[in-house]
Length: 330
Image 1 (cartoon, rainbow, N blue to C red):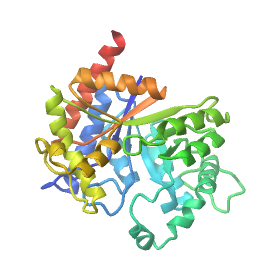
Image 2: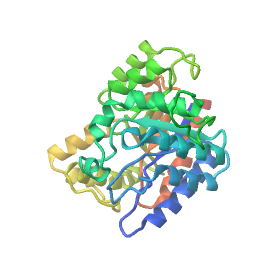
Image 3: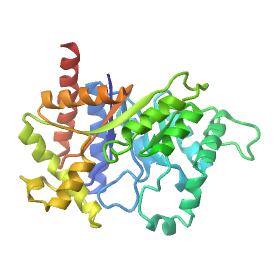
Image 4: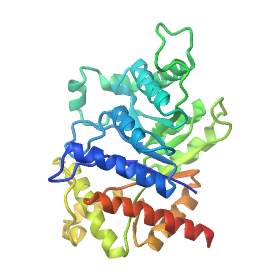
């Protein structure tokens, strides 16, 4: 079972962007040492508690701190960008870290409607052009002579392209283009089973893949006990509730009994959105991941999550990997 890491590069209350970026490098290094396959950063904008907006820059920083783990975007929100610029950015990363770069592509803007004004671009219209832009990006890396301008760096680069999704749209596109597909079930669980079934059913072999290849995301926090893990997870629970309530901020410290303190509607919303999770002692986490792997038949699983104390996230990664290995061996 291949395990990977999704990092939102959280900025904690009382912390700074500088510290968050330093911790991202430490997390990626810890993931590499523990045996994780990939480390991905997601593009978000206008969010005080997330420092990964300049995704390619963050990956260059992380790449310098690691040696072997694959690093990439989970993902780049392509409607926000010109394919030429992304080809140049990831062509540069591929030149710096050959054989290690992933380029996961998403269709959502990575922010609310303020991004439309901030980017001076019709993002909603650009989202409709997402399939064409993906094909253009592939052409840039292939050095297609029909393009009006060749990306350099970019031409001849070989980042591993993925299509990301939280609905059926991405599944259909990934299947049509014969690309690997990653589903964001850690925050959008509703269409997980239908999207994976659709992708596998409609997959068309390509020069990239001869068979479907799926990655699925799950929230994971491991600690010495179930109670401790639930306490640590209360930080990201608070962040999610605040986001959905229209008051996002930096990652707060854990609060004992946080879920029990929520009104019924907020708790139901949180429980629904966090249903794809593995939070607890190592054995609890490994069992939940195994069940998720059986449900999805995923080729890879990527673990999301955040803790107020970054050292405890690194420890969570080590506990999770060791527990999964022990379970597989048993």
